[in-house]
Length: 87
Image 1 (spheres, rainbow, N blue to C red):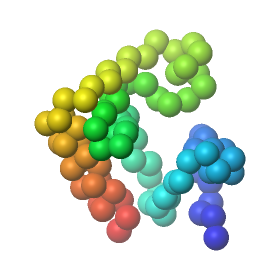
Image 2 (cartoon, rainbow, N blue to C red):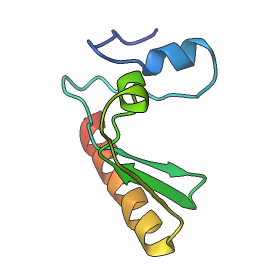
Image 3 (cartoon, rainbow, N blue to C red):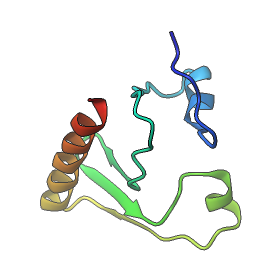
């Protein structure tokens, strides 16, 4: 059963298209950190909100790096946050 949608969430649009596998939680708040790790080797982070407005009209910043210590630290932080939000 699909969890209820929260106001402002757009990720479910992608899951409906089957473009991305997505795991959701049932926390009442959002994990609002703005970073992504790609294949365990690249990191994207910054103010970018991953929305249509961010791509078309907002003033955003995004840094992409493959620096192993940064990728590793952000991956560890994601795992820590995910476990905290899953409870």
